[in-house]
Length: 135
Image (cartoon, rainbow, N blue to C red; front, side, top):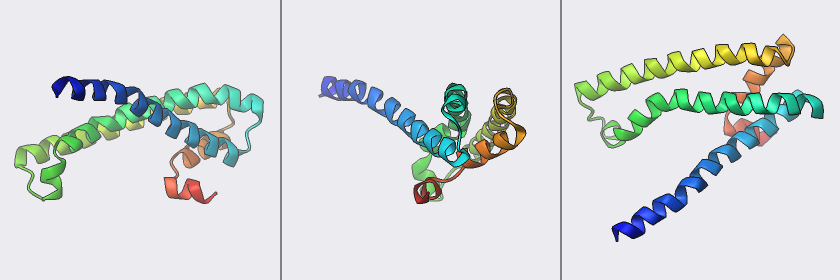
């Protein structure tokens, strides 16, 4: 039984990892279409965008991973004082890292795009899934 479960987990990991990149591909397609990027500009922006999303996910995971660990007590509104302190600290660390990533990638995108395009890239990249699906 344990071997079967282990094999199932190993088999699902690539699927989960590709699912994330599928989301990032969908997000990039939305951003580039909203911005009306040319093929040449899309080719330059795409690798930087995917690197940005990877780092952004990692920064957000600082909090999300801990939150997932305490999901049951959070939903039951029964977290301990120590869990609350840890969650708050993780949230602040995550927010700080997200800000660092955004600042760093503002510079990287600015080497390719105009300041206006950089602004809109971040705006569209932050659109919710429901807003992206309304196109």
